[in-house]
Image: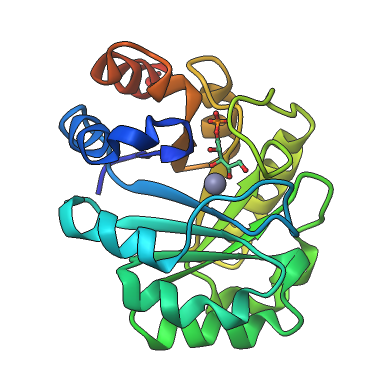
Length: 220
Ligand code: DX5
Ligand code: ZN
């Protein structure tokens, strides 16, 4: 496996030209395609649902990393998995019985992730690590692309990484929000290995160069 996986977030792509955008970003070196699902309640924005994911699944070659920003994720995990999600993350803040939700995702043969907002502690997941494949640490408040990286969250990534090492957990840390060729080094050093980037890639005229810059910034 590569040292880091780059997951472009199509939230910042040209939605009128999505097929071409995904083709281009995969050719440019994307490892995963990050899809942000927003309900207008859990976050103040709307995107698309399972039908949108099933359309993307027809042409995307890389695994689909589906980030559910929903008040009621339990009602939607199966429709999104049926639509072709390869990884599904649900927010710690919106799941009443998150271990049950994660178990249900894993039962379908899909990677299960816990997403955590900037002001939320990760401590509760210490008790359910065996049910988690990856932890998605938000480095912005979810809802929009192009926001500024919240520096204070780096400490959380470091602490979570120590916890995972302590338990010899194979769980991977993903980060999402405000990642560019400078902030990536901070989250990489703190232990993150799946990197979501929206604006930094899609607002760049050359996606390949943008992805290369991200990878290079993590080299010693
Ligand atoms: C924010 C989303 C992110 C967003 C990241 O709610 O979860 O995936 O697209 O965009 P950038 O990289 O532009 O901050
Ligand atoms: Zn996201």
